[in-house]
Image (cartoon, rainbow, N blue to C red; front, side, top):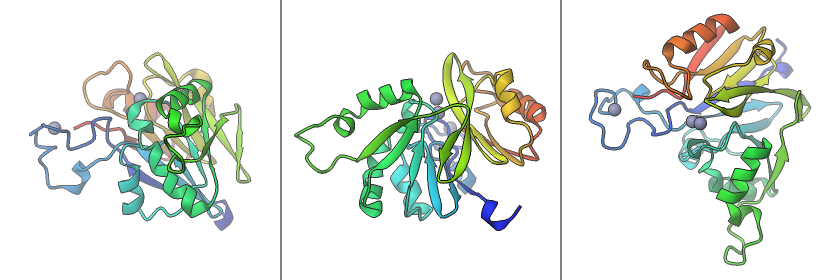
Length: 234
Ligand SMILES: [Zn+2]
Ligand SMILES: [Zn+2]
Ligand SMILES: [Zn+2]
């Protein structure tokens, strides 16, 4: 792969919606000193050609960006509207100041609708919020490909229980968090991967996430050269 084609992935958080350690839990994982048992809410950044693309705005966005020295965000891609993937949205205003511009946020129609209602102060004129609201432009996720900064990104339709959500493919890398079923057409979109990041919530079954056994089975079917699990519970 030539230098110019390379992308870099940083996992900002790989924990389930409660985060690890979980409030009020004294299990061996939640009381562990091992840094691998400290998992903030699930989010990644993708870097290529000097651009930084954030996937989801977790509740710990500020802490994640400080810890990983993220000093620009050129665009945000949303997988879906669940709180653990969106409620850090307000922290994006720091990047408005750094970038001196609005930030484009790509979301499905239903995710955009949820964001408009959850963060009405950011998307509707609110006189009680004169200059402190984040400046964001909501843009649709176009299938089959989304053109972003000179590259084609493939949105991957997934099912999270009955909720349609998006994974995203960048070249030979794909990110599929929060899913319990990968439709056959989307399996085709995941062929020939070098690296996959996939939802694997816990050992016991769950109605809206792959458990470990299902994630391992999906990993084998997809056949990426390397697969990492995310959205992991305690
Ligand atoms: Zn989630
Ligand atoms: Zn625990
Ligand atoms: Zn979710």
